[in-house]
Image 1: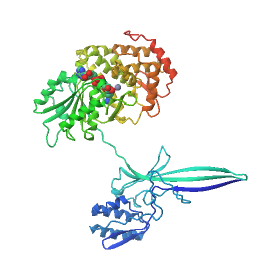
Image 2 (image 1 turned 90 degrees about the vertical axis):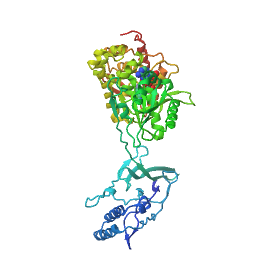
Image 3 (image 1 turned 120 degrees about the vertical axis):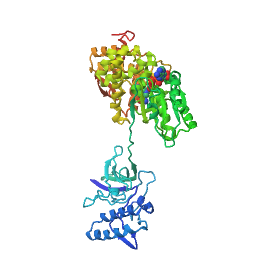
Image 4 (image 1 turned 45 degrees about the horizontal axis):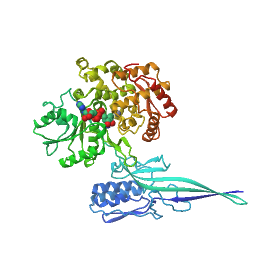
Length: 590
Ligand SMILES: NC(=O)c1ccc[n+]([C@@H]2O[C@H](COP(=O)([O-])OP(=O)(O)OC[C@H]3O[C@@H](n4cnc5c(N)ncnc54)[C@H](O)[C@@H]3O)[C@@H](O)[C@H]2O)c1
Ligand SMILES: [Zn+2]
């Protein structure tokens, strides 16, 4: 014989039933039965509400009552109420039944037999929404409840907008229902007890979207510090008290090369410039450098809305961006990139950060500490590229080629045709400048970056083609003592991914060769002695950790097209490494 017993156990965070309440209006005390409890948040602020707002609240309560006679009476009372400046706070009554606020934030168990599995706890009247029968909605109370399911717990979530911030602040209840089955076998029967457990919790949700807008301004080649160019000055804005000072974080290489011009630019306008000079290069991209800038900002006493300038390569911009985001919990800053890599990549997005050495593991992690924090604007002067050495220019072209491989065969063809000249002339070849080729390469790169980053600034979407070349490169760059720059590491990773694509049959050998040759023309490394199975497999594991449970490694399917894959195996990496060894990476072409 089988006996089935059903039992319900309810646990409530907060439970509000419909209650009787009263409102003092003028000399009359009015009683409204069947109205909902006035949320405590409103009651608490009742004294501070203006008569108009009180009138709207009461009017809304009245409208929610559902008998015609009450409707007429409400109208009269509202008119009286409108004239009254001295309304007392509406009485907020506790629910007659148990009110249990759980101490563990989620729920507390209350073993009411036959408990209400809806919880009923949002402190509202239980109606679906607040639209009136006649469709007339009062703006401050135009509240729509929202229902959703919590993906983690499966709880049903009811969000009720709060009265004074209907668009973004909600009170919620979360109701979670689960079943527990106990089976007891005796000599004569099997007793199955199914216990239904309903738990609710309550809280508030604030939904807020930041408006993000920043201009990426092109500056005419080499004119940023010209006396008649006001872009640098304009970018630092205006202030009610006026500014006759400016603060700039400057890359030490830039300070050496352009310090006189920078100081002259401000001096000629009677502006006192304070500079904080820090070294570029990956080795110094650490929290200590951020501290240095913060110290200087404190002693300069940078005001809350006073933008400071950050002038330098990708490392200095990443460090300065982090300081900007921390100082006074965020101050505006203007990015002035001075390397090709920073012009086309590091300056146009909203990321910043530093590498971090963990005291426990003694490992240094690339860009492990940082934030998403938009600059107030960027000023891009390609004239800075001319003072970079050839290796640094190739390094920047590593990021440009990455964009070409995943998004633009046009850009690839431009690099294929002119890359070598661009490197050798440091982007100063007159015919490439006058024919617009150099400018087109820079413009296309920036546009592709912005097209990719723009809709996904906070990287909510983790399948990102711009992560091409950024899976294995992170560990390659962090190998102690490794002499490899960021764009170079991206390129080695990029070529390894080309080989992976080939082994998967996504691209043919002629495409592999074409890409290899282009990389060589740009003077970029295609392999590294540090790229071995251990590093490659660890990179895949790190990717899973960083990209929410999946590898999401971008591979190309042809030049200019890519997909993200998450099923790369150790065996596949082994075969790709063997194939990498078959290329003569020291030769010019293959
Ligand atoms: N935030 C982002 O979205 C983002 C994107 C891509 C790369 N990055 C970061 O950027 C960094 C690489 O940037 P980088 O390639 O510019 O390297 P870098 O900043 O280290 O600059 C390279 C060297 O060139 C010097 N330098 C700078 N401008 C110069 C100029 N005009 N003339 C001569 N020398 C100059 C620097 O002092 C440095 O010694 C990496 O740390 C990378 O992680 C960030
Ligand atoms: Zn990069």
